[in-house]
Length: 398
Image (cartoon, rainbow, N blue to C red):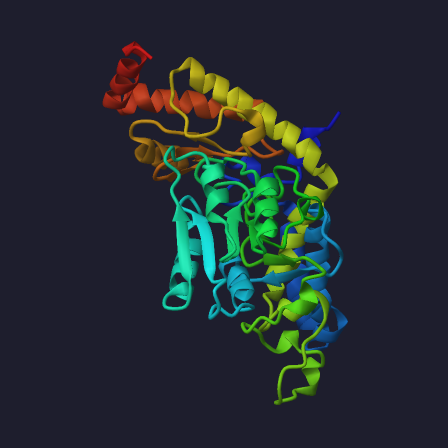
């Protein structure tokens, strides 16, 4: 039986507030401070020697730790500042001049990705955006029908950020491969809270970051490239880290490195690569299967409390399709979320979703009960009309 309290003690910040926002920013592990100090000490004591002693290989070391969490081969994960940059690296591998120049996305993708593809494809390719009428799920059959012989890429979130819906990645990838298309699987909202296996899924690319469920802080995004694809791709978004002999400072054509570094570009974010390892190591120690079981338990408790109170949710009710977040679509949700944050219940609000509550392995049942009680108190005592709207919805026939 997992000793959840022992893991919670490694996050001393949790004594200061109720951290229920791991889908946006994971809690800070105590060891992150030690690693930040180690970075400063290595910089100070070793100076420029730190590059050859550890910094140069750090992207590969961290990439392999991330890869191990999602079943990836060694040296198949490169490190980037963020997911948008990682997807831009993928995009830069392809010529959009031919007939295969369509990208298929769903409208519930994270906006940054939609911005990137719209701008990149202007005048060069086609973007087909699949509507999601219910605001929660992906219309899988409609998406599959749009993936045809003219499709180049299908960027798709493994878990939708608004609703926590787990998409049918296996079916989407299989359809894409049937017609010669490739899939960029965004695991930002899945890795660290549900099992991910890129080899089993036969994913072509996977992007994500350590910011959220991996408790690693900002600046440590990543890109997985299927090993057999690596030698066939040459990203034009590149730089000196992708050179086979970077310290030769050759000004001629790029002689590309092999493995994950072939998808790197400029100097990496060394401080972030130190700090993110604290979260990666503890998530690895706890284990994704155990984290998933804990997530299902805590979210079931939250959903049951919501059902008793007649609260509407914007989250799948079926556990196998729901990841780590529960979205409460309440009247005055934005105001309630603001009041919760002011009182050290850290949650967030998203249009079309409501209040997003995302317990992780370090959260407790008591914290679920406390946030529910605080929401109810705000509704009835501080936003009376919200409570009235809620009571009215209970009286209406279903």
